[in-house]
Length: 147
Length: 153
Image 1 (spheres, rainbow over the protein chains, first blue to last red):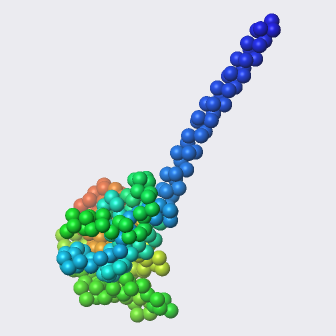
Image 2: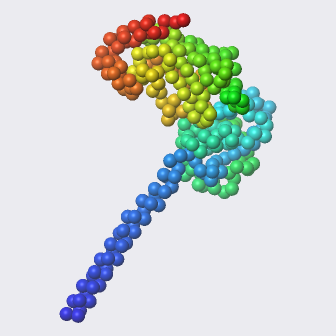
Image 3: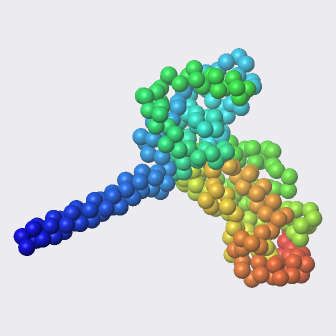
């Protein structure tokens, strides 16, 4: 009798534990999944995500000056030496930082080709090289390719 | 007033529109508000709007170019994507707006919309129904409206 009672109590306890575990699995996953994408999709990129996008100071080279399209498509001004510019990693289009950031905060797409600017792909380059001078050399390579 | 602190981009666009207008399109800013443009679009050839001169108004909101210009037909037009208030159903004026687009590109798109009405994405249900049920007849009505309401001057 006592043994049967003990078994049934332990079975009930086991069942409740399993139910709690299942509940944690089901409730835990969607919240952790949904929090990131919904934050990003509702509007544009957050300031933190913008920081991860490559940035460079515009350099005027003898060749580049004439061959590269040298206007910012947003303000229509010509890029001047030392202008702070941002390079969108997936399509290679560049704009002034101040011009493109205010757009990307609204819509995370390239203004020229509408390529999605995802922060996910940028996690890997979260090494502090975001908005500084370190990207200059990699941009030069890209510009050479585009020219 | 509204003209103080006009962004350089708007000044540039205005200068280019005036010095190098797109074929069949004219846009000139109002004297008292440089964000308000009086626009005229000629009906494209080989469209039911051929021979018509269509007046529109275009307004650049404070957030421009981060927000699309507001454009409306002032001339009555029989078109499935334009309603009787002159409002235009065009994606780049709504969710497909991009700050790389300009007044010129918007007006060219509207001109293209006149050449290619899209009754599957209507703004004016009755006209779209007419267009789908009997396109030849709808085109005739569009031509007649062009003669009646858009015959210039």
